[in-house]
Image (cartoon, rainbow, N blue to C red):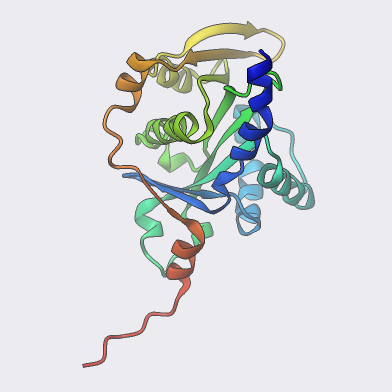
Length: 227
């Protein structure tokens, strides 16, 4: 335990290494949650359906900006906005219009920085049921294990969200507890070699780039090639 506690400051610092990290998959691009994303995110979270699915209370726009700063600056949180890769590849489409959801990893036990809670939200209904949640889960777990030192993941899901529960069980998550008060189930998994083979398999499709450079290149004006 003393050795583990000595690692806590180092692992907390690592949680913020995604400040300029872009993760690219086959269907999605994950980018850091910044202030430009807040208005669209706030629109999502005004939805009673999403409030119920995420067990969230409605916030004002100003409160949403405060929350964004918290998630971006806190040492125990790592947050990405999920973008539609096909849309994002078109520089004429603003990044905010490419947003489809978000994914978070945050530490829940100060004495055990290898344990993290995982949250995934596909906010735009037409993007659900198309495999984005599965791809994001694989990408975020892989990133958590190999970049953040996470070895145990937990998720809290509403009891009526059968689709999400089934998805995580396919990733070998097992039921840890049920809260009748909050009407949610907690699932968990410990990472081992067998799990990495089953869940991650071949991750060659996942690329990491500098977010700032990628964003700036999208916004740069197009200059035709002179003949």
